[in-house]
Image (tube, rainbow, N blue to C red; front, side):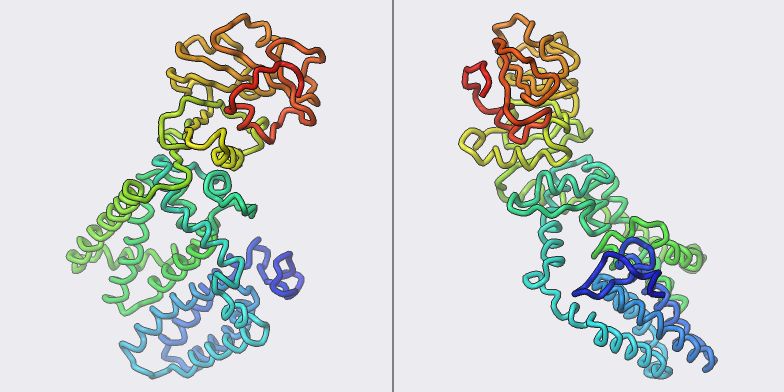
Length: 454
């Protein structure tokens, strides 16, 4: 078992088992499902030998579960087990609880023996960096949703947080929001968000009605476990995390479609639709009534424009990640917005030149966005200032004879495209190639009037 469990995840030098699933949290979710299946079998079977067999099988699974050190998995297991135990106590009282108590005792002993209990006890955000980092991200979720009506795009939640919402004093790297629900709510637009909320309300109501009518809490237990686990990590991004809960759908659907469930059917549908709409309206209201923030951010419905600032920006830049430092380019712009040169101003970032408003007054083209040449700027009648950062063909722009708009071509002196001679309209930046760490200053700060190398 040890070779299968060895990985780079450690807790105080102790390996956290993941069973090749790339994350101990994902492994814990699968193990929690297995424990819930065994728990339901222990409490439902009338054959004593089967109950004790399930108890014996739960012992190694519980030990493996404890060795994942997954606090989210532990809370998910408790959520699922609560539904099963509560239903059993309601129907049978305290009968047949001995095997269950033994399983719980073995899991508890395992957590104490390997140190998992100590991790659970030290889970306060002020004392645990992992929990604290999650809260920093999750506080930004309502703003991230309100600022992007069309969503930030699939797979972009972590990048969007780091670029536009992460405190500039922090530098943790994130692929997602370490929460499947929040990740999808941020990445999808309003319709998708409404459907996600409605879908979870529907699934849980379906499980509750099935438990009420069939005295079977297992489907509800499995969906509670999945929903809780997905809240504390990104486990729901894997298909296998859904396999066991989805296998519990047929009996739930049968109960839902039964003729005698007509009233319950209407209630479930109304609850799902109402839950989705209430959630969506609540977040929209938050976006409208929230207090003023240090940085106002808005991403257009089609995702082609991002504005930093309250007012309609007069300054726009066409995105090129190579020049602007990768997908987290927003960090540099937020830092610039706190300087005297940027404070109180608004800035627009367009994914392509066609997305720049025709009323733009000051425009910066970066890298590949400058390949179209100055003919592409004819539609901008109010243009006063044009800056070209790291163009592939700087002489094409330097040969443009224009006094309005003003033109400045900016090249890194280490770039193979940088002209060797000093030319009017050329500004060279020492020590860089085609990436400018201080690109907001070059794009948006007032021109100093000099054309020679700095």
